[in-house]
Image 1 (cartoon, rainbow, N blue to C red):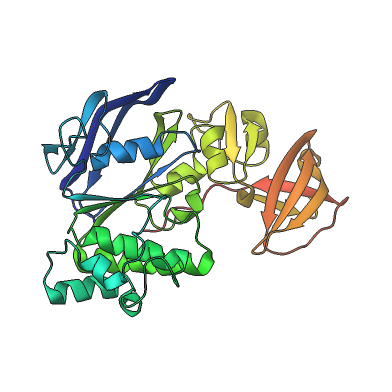
Image 2 (image 1 turned 180 degrees about the horizontal axis):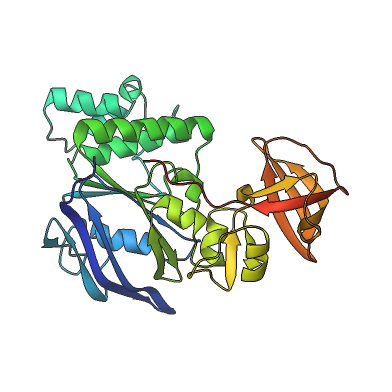
Length: 331
């Protein structure tokens, strides 16, 4: 459950690379227990921001504070890293030629019962007798690396593209592991990804990064259905861009905030067998996407997409379009 206590506060943080800025005046907050997600394309500054928050990199301007105390990086610490923050890199490595139990025991200050509970929550108790460099899957190695970090008892866990190299089954295992850790150990998460599909079911708040700047902050439902621009829209999947006149023609309500260009998700575009002439479109292609069919259409000399659960029409057929407003967010 999210509380109002501020866990992390980032104020006007900037960082320069030799070839230009990596981050521009980043300002954000995370409350205790809040699921915070950062999304953006490769090179948008996600990992740089995580490393500054973790104390592994120094900001050139601004500062980040954790539980009210400034986070300092390698310029101020012989051993970089903040004690209360753990950072699981997408390029994590385990030391070779260690028995897993010995690898985890080194530097562990937890009591035996606490350690057992943590390893059980990470789903690795059956792996303790194996070697770190043989007989382990990528997902198992990742959970061992996660357990190693959590033995330091952090309050905040930073996850850098944790699902990138995992198949569907291992993603589900990791998701369940994170849920157990949250409920049993009071850990808050900050996760970054270039694929919002990994974050949408989990995040309380989403921050969108582009070229080192924050361009949108909001709930997943808001960012998905009301992206500020086509960059954000593309991050979250297929979309249509309509001018305001066409949006009104399709049935979207007229509001004072209706923009010149309206971004409409294909799932909000429906097809009927008849209707007004102005809404007539021709199906140019149909693709089976597993859970739905993606229809490509030509309407008013524009290529657009609509999604449907069943295949009701065929390529070349004429259909009549109508748009619906996004569903209300479930509480």
